[in-house]
Amino acid sequence: MKVLVTGGGGFLGKAIVKLLVEQGDEVCSFTRTISPQLTALGVDQFIGDLNDITAVTKAVDGCDLVYHVAAKAGVWGSYNDFYQPNVIGSKNVILACRKCDVSRLVYTSSPSVVFDGTDMEGIDESVPYPSHYLSWYPQTKAEAEQNIIAANDSTLATVALRPHLIWGPEDNHLVPRILERGRAGALKRIGNRPCLVDTVYIDNAAQAHLQAASKLAIGSQVSGHVYFVSNDEPLPLWDIVNKILAAGGIPSVEKQVSPQLASFAGLILENAYRLFKLDGEPRMTRFVAKEMSTAHWFDLSAAKRDFGYQPEISINTGLARLKDWLRQEC
Image 1 (tube, rainbow, N blue to C red):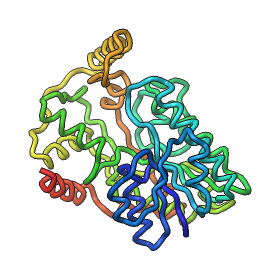
Image 2 (tube, helix red, strand yellow):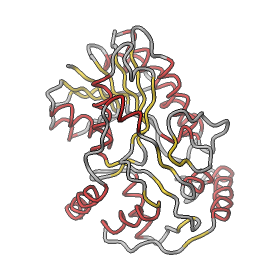
Image 3 (cartoon, rainbow, N blue to C red):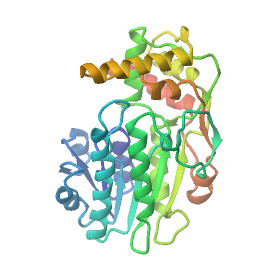
């Protein structure tokens, strides 16, 4: 089978690519830069931008299945920064699949698409989208997810997965940010509630994508649906943060601020960055303040029932692997 992974050079995309190569598929990647690791795996790499329908179509042509993993992530930037790659980019992938007669499309979404600023405790996929978002990332991912699911029909089977807080060796986003801020003493607990939070180890997140794809077909049980994906081991947020810090040899976070103060600081910083057009991103935003002071854990019954999802790597095993990897990197 010939498979395309958009964002194949990224953290999750690369993990999916590795599994596909291991099972003998012919794999292509669509990214903005060449990845030496993908070259070593023998992966054909198409270089381009998701906003370029011609480039996207060229990459999709001849494939049997597409994993659309690429996206603009983050908590700061303009609406257009997120809208173009996340919404327009996803529309281009759908159009390319139709033009090239690709019948299966797996989309990587995010649980943040249904986050309304309050606790999400054991929720399932029936929870509606909120009426308002505090960040462009979840807003544009929600629009893209809805477009992907709406595209499911008699010629194209689509499914969307919502992995939550992916981490592990080779992470270039979550783990480095935690370690960097931990070393700088810039982390503070927000509130004192032991809010349970789901995360997912990278190998489990990648495997979920392949499992969903294996059941995806026109009119199948998974087509046209969304699924939460996690390690199914919710822990208090600051417990997992401190475990990641410990893997990097950094002391635990003990200082704390109130959710109200964190949210107010986020508002002030957001306004300052907009007003003075500052580079980088604020150390705190209202979205981050809400995310870090509320519960986020999910009912995985649908994923387990419909495509047999079962996380194989536990959090403790994953942390041991992360610790070993960080030692090698240092």
